[in-house]
Length: 258
Image (cartoon, rainbow, N blue to C red; front, side, top):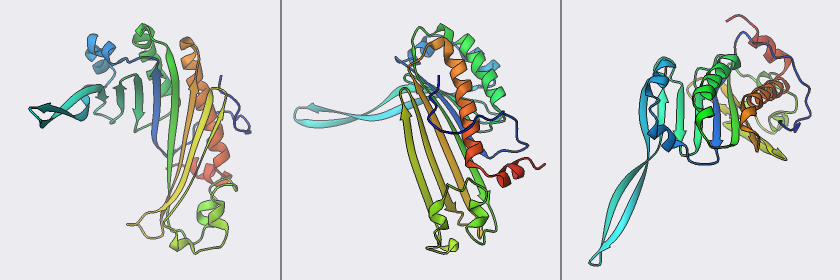
């Protein structure tokens, strides 16, 4: 169960008409290396059936130096550390790197679709891996572009009053701001939350800024059979956190028809 690290209220999940998710990453870390499991079992057909038809190896380039008659010889080695399966239709990926199984969603639609995908892989693959899950990390990266910025209110009014306080101090002109960053890490027992926020000027678009809210929720030490429930809890916490981060003005914008 995810610890109650944030003192925020629970919200009834409901879809917005538009979202600003730039990337969603779900990483499942096992207690041992799992790439050999995939190397020794042919999952090509299964991945193809689920849209991940492009396979590439992930290699770690190193140099091996040996001494032959006092002459050093450098030899490059390219050890395979994992595999990437890509869906050519949406560029979503599944990466298997040593002991990690990673879902990378570049065209995230909603949690329900992601959950269906995870359940399919859980039934076909995870249930057959005789290795305990050590950790689950669920990261969501929101990127919001704000155009025609005349003063700091055009940006800060979209978010909780406690965010971007330095931008409100009247120490500088908003037009002189190139990049503002803030981050913090909270941990309690086996749960951890990493939050990174930033506001950066978009150089090729006049008076425009990109605001990024990057939240990573990590959970250690739990029963493998509870993984799906844990991910569901993580997603609820992501939703509650995003609701706290954003103002009513931002939520109204997200509910506007595109």
